[in-house]
Length: 357
Image (cartoon, rainbow, N blue to C red):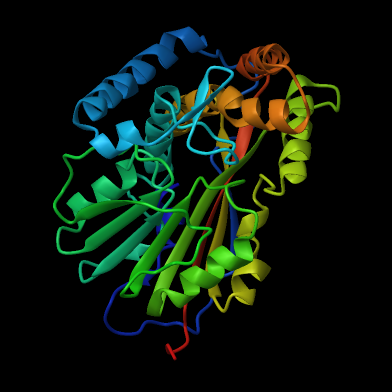
């Protein structure tokens, strides 16, 4: 796996040109397979607990140093979950911060310990992280690139205050006009499916705020899929309901925002698009895939209610009890030893290859 991912790397630097004319085509890779039929699956309770405990411990440390700004920003509580505003469907409470911490670890495993698919050079000067969440990625980038300025934005002030001196967290909604005073070398957008109603506008702002040769990297997970999935499976019902609700809300979920055409219409040249089939759980015989599967399964199962609660109750008039009941049934279905569940993860690298006006 490591070799394939390294082939996807592109230089990101504030100085000098690279082989911009060598556009790399789509690449589809699999981190899991169905060859492990009959392979023993470790019960979820035996491996979920330690990872969740570690993430919760990290969140406790975060809470002790959290800025006062975060405590005074108004939170909207619905059905036992806290939200940053009245329209974004994902919660911002401690349970969600724990899930995002686990998801960050899953991405590190997918990229063999690296923070980006792009090869970010040490000469990089300015980096922007859109939708930073608890800020794990931005903090790690600040430590890795101490001479770069890292600006990380979110609509929820849930980030710690004890961070590297080159990392700045800003309360900002990316759907509004971007007002940064200087362009960036690299822009990072991860896990933002369903966050925006107009991705054309988001990519247009990103293009406008990148330097010549600047790179944008977008990454996201798709729906949960079963190896043998029927239309009446709980996974299918869950996916269909969430997609319908998101479309009704005007903020479609899924991987549609990673389409090449959207980026190209904003002026970008797509350098790389890579898909990974990520196993959920321990069903693969490959040790690395099993480790990735552990983390991905935790993130996926903990994200079921987080993703669906506000969408289904607000857009489709479901009761909170009905949402939780469906989530429990999906958990049981996905955790079945023979389910061989997976999710598609897609990474896209694109560049601004024109001189700024």
